[in-house]
Image (cartoon, rainbow, N blue to C red):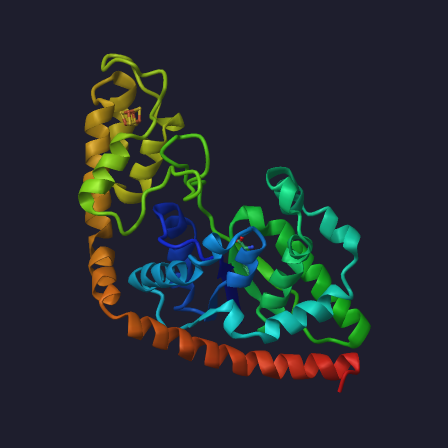
Amino acid sequence: MRVFSGARPTGRQHIGNYLGAIRNYAELQEEYECIYCIVDVHALTTMEDALSTSRIQSNIQEMMLDWLACGLDPQKSILFVQSRVPEVLELHTFLSMITPLGWLLRVPTFKEKVRVQPHNVNYGLVGYPVLQAADIVLYKAELVPVGEDQLPHLELAREIARRFNNIFGYTFPEPEAKLTNLPLVLGLDGEQKMSKSLGNDIELASSPKETEERVMTAVTDPARRYLSDPGHPDICNIFRLHHFFNSEGVEEIARACPEAHIGCVECKKMLAGRMNACLAPMRERRENLARKPQYIREILDHGAERARIIACATLGEVKHKIGLT
Ligand code: TRP
Ligand code: SF4
């Protein structure tokens, strides 16, 4: 079975990206043939000026550093940048002809974008899920590791694949989402999903000191204003993070916090220490890789080359079935 997933070039990755996606990407490599793509063309749908696009290359570089540091292995997986395999744009055009506009206008992420960027409801934004479907089916991938927010896109990809198969004969497997069984990683505000744009994140590449400083700013149980107030770990995001980075310590905190035997400052210090210990090997690998930008470029060249071989074969088949050759 072939695995495909894509992520927009957001630059340095944070611990939410790691726990929610990258960690799973790395695990899947042991079992499947994996293709991981940095989707720079998708990113253009929300970029309005040359200042934002000027950051794409450095974002790709930074993201690759994190991916590699977290164990994505170019020997095992194909790692590449979307626009380097332009066949996907051709396939996107063909798929767009069999995708009813109504399907796209109903997609929740599209409606959300219309809400947040009403001044930039561009044509590409409507086709976003068609491009995503093209990403996946171009490689005839069957399994797509994604978060829950991507399920409508995956459903659409399945519908598009099915429709193509019905019209032109069986070509694409219907891709299936592989949900990461992860409780949501919230940001330091304890309210919204961890995200770079909200500024509530902790970068994997932060120094131990920065990590501790960031953790100390996190919102905990708002009902705990004094050390003597009993806490509620079940609603506290710091507690959630302890689960990931301090599994041996959670039980003790679950007991001590509601009895006010541990204060938030101490609890956070402990978390930061555990986080830094867990992230240390990745940070070291990242530093070493960062000294070799040429090596990153080679990996992406090689990845694009390998991806392109598969892409060209599929596209040839598609054009033939449609009657263009
Ligand atoms: N839409 C995805 C996101 O925002 C990114 C993406 C693009 C993707 N193409 C993909 C994910 C193909 C999985 C498969 O996260
Ligand atoms: Fe959260 Fe820890 Fe404070 Fe309890 S002690 S509220 S778990 S930060």
